[in-house]
Image 1 (tube, rainbow, N blue to C red):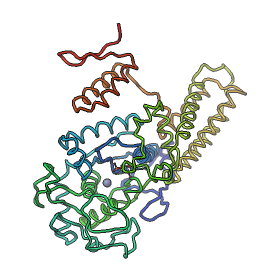
Image 2: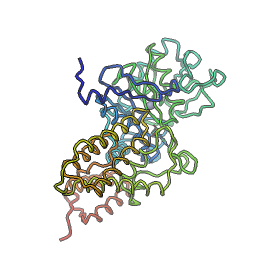
Image 3: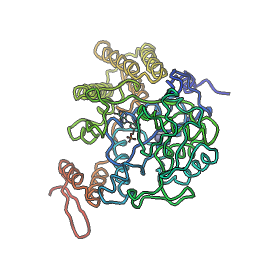
Image 4: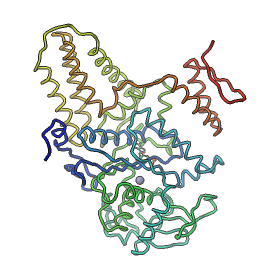
Length: 479
Ligand code: AMP
Ligand code: ZN
């Protein structure tokens, strides 16, 4: 029997999420009682991720943190795409091995998510670590007649899978069965048989695996079917990604996994809308992007960037402008300032007792109610700002004593478990410098001079001098 603790009450308020599969808000019911299995399509590690990508990961982070807030244990898996058309092209252009190339961008990705205070996933499987799992699914699909061999690869036959198009809600007339596409990415206008396995071609150079399927490499879509099932089973609870992944990537994941195993793949599909610039999706191909590092170099704080990416409802497009980023900076500064004023010594006045608790309860329950409604972050933030307004009024007019201020601080800290913008950064200055020096060394080893210079400059700003010695790099403060 469940005890009626505050924690259980919190969990028992119902969370509704918008399921792309049904185009409806649905009450969230996990497969297991207190656990949630969550899969997020992770980055293709061929470049720095841009802040559009981080919008998608911050949306996933908000979802995960709120599920945890409600008492669920979340098992979160995020894949790293470390072999595909783009990573192979990138490594060849630089003349480095694929593994070395993707390792570099994976490292940058992990640094960036740490900077943005995105909770790490429990597992970050790499596509190259799951080739045999992918081959096993492809063999099943061949056996079931859902896949076929062609001259350049093994393809999924979309006309053979009854449910093809159900996620993207494609019309039958949009399915060009029999027409084939080898490329990893293609548009909605051309739902075609897609490559599961690409036979080796001289353009792939040394990137290939010898499997029963023949010498080659996987197509992009099969990796998520293999990795999600490997770590989360089938079905699992929630699959997230940016809306551009709905078709063809997620449609193809469904066809692969449901086709191979004959059961439902995912219960809830959640997609976030794009970060746009001047009305267009921020993307590397359009060249209209900022990386996190671009914005940090311009002097914006990670907290302000996180706030900007978080504060618009995930299903609404977010138009990126520097004015909005400046406004986000002011908002975050205001919240931090409020919290530190609450922590300052307080007058020894009589407690107002219940009223403070009621104010907190009212706003925190609005906060939860809003997030329960498909993560309505704007309303949730409005509830927090109401609490701030009330707190400020009380501090100015009636005065708050230490205990009362402490209660507000704890409420803010509870909300911040979900928001992740107020936490003090626990920086260890010595360790931070050591890490920077190591990163500069890595950048130099990889002949990434631009990055090495950038880090030298950062260290200089921290008053650290680097010296190259026979024993390696040494660093010191000026004498
Ligand atoms: P990629 O590394 O291109 O596979 O993208 C990683 C994630 O970022 C995916 O979930 C994409 O849907 C998402 N994404 C890419 N561009 C944007 C954007 N402009 N706004 C929001 N999400 C994006
Ligand atoms: Zn994926």
